Image 1 (tube, each protein chain N blue to C red):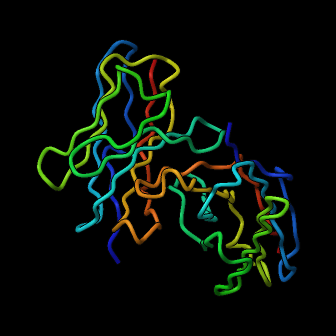
Image 2 (cartoon, rainbow over the protein chains, first blue to last red; image 1 turned 135 degrees about the vertical axis):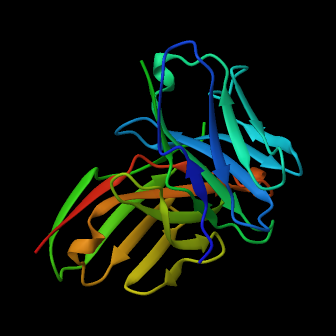
Length: 114
Length: 115
C-alpha cells in the first residue's frame, strides 16, 4: 500500500539554525500539506501546496517557513532560523484529487530545538 | 472563529465494550469530517469520514454519526480491543477550503482499552 514517508525521523538543532524536513508524498497525489503537533496538543495546519504554489497557510507559517517541491517527488519544509517554540512533531500529508478528500499522513519528524 | 473540540479528553473501557468518542465543531459551513487514530510516535491514521450531506456512515467496527443541528460528531467503536488504544482526533474541512483541504483538528481523546 502506498504511503507517505518522511526524513529524518528525529532532528535536533540549535536555536537560530536552519532545518529542512523532507517528505515523499504518495505518487500521483496532487495536494500536499504540512502540519505540526506540539507535544500533548492537537495537530495544527501549517500550509497546503497545490500546482507548485502555496494555496493556503496558517498564522504559524510566517516568513521563517518555506515549502518547496524541488523535483516532482520530494516536498520539503524549511525553517530558516529555528526557535525553541518550533520544537514539535511535523507531519507531511498528501491527497489525491480535488474529489478525494482523504489525506494520508506520514510518520512525522520530531524536531527538537535546543 | 472556527474550532473543533472534544467533550471528553480521556476514555477508559473494558475489552469487548463499545466505545463512543464525541466531538463538537463550531463551523456550520464545514463540509467534511474525519476521524483519525494516532498511536504513540506515529502520524494520524484515517479511520472513517463523512460528508455533511450524511448523518451516519459505517465502517468495519466503526460508525460515525453527524448531527448538524447541534454541530456534533461521534465515533462509535464496537467490541473495543486493546489495539484500539490510541488518541482519537476529529477533524473538519471547511466548505471554503474544500478545494485545497485544510484540516482543522480537535483536541483529541485518549482511549484506553483494558484487557
